[in-house]
Image (tube, helix red, strand yellow):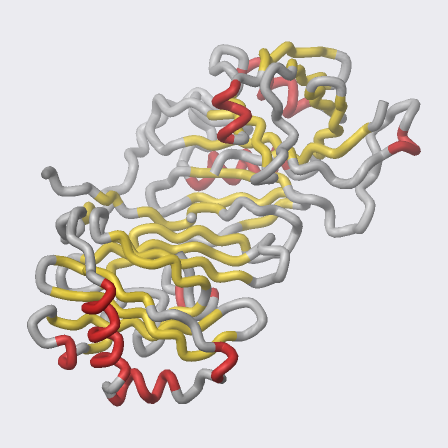
Length: 371
């Protein structure tokens, strides 16, 4: 039987001009050996295991170690919220978006040293979502065993995947420290007798300004708007930087009942594009002005894949890539409050380590207005 590698993670993010643009955020992704760990401003924590930096990870002890295959896309994940009664969530996740490793009907089991835990079978929903949540009743015993273990293996169907445990306990201790659980009865690592009294921090709540979901821009109107805005000095300066072969279609969307939003591509490099974002009155589009961002934009230019604007949700998002593989970078979302775009969520993966799962380091509470 072939032995593959399963990398362990705690569950755990639109983009920016560079990572430095979000340097005012206190939260950062931390690394413990081959683990990435993050706790956001709501003190919710996540941990993901990463492939080793070496080209070939060390094989688990097995008679067929010489048949070790390429790094698998599965990993084990932990997450925990900040309140006293928040349990640890433990999942088996798949980075692969298509033809993943979790297939309907497969049996899952976890062998920790010499003890085997039967976890259940992969349902159609699990296969579709690429995530299997382990029964909460089993998690305390699993955690206790994992923290003492020297090795572990996950069996998925007929495949066995070695779990990399190095750094896991250090990551869980970081959970405790960030959530103020050290020496309390709720701690995962340094458990004590003290009562856990910390309360989750107060977090700003935003209500987006949204538009009628049924409103659309006709093709002839869109062409007219594009011509009007492209004549503006702001747009001409942007377009002058764009090579003709790099020309990209403008983003033109309804922002709210009184405004349009425009995204004009200025520059495209090997990995990302720079998009100038403008806000224009519907009654007079030629009076378009630079969109205001509280984070993540330089002169209203965002860098990365501009994924557009959802008028029905009031959210602007994009993705910034640091590698051709897309295994590192960041995602961010901004909420339109009627005057500016306020950063509402930010996910980051600074190291290019084969992980396709960014980690949430910033999250505001966004409440969609009632219809």
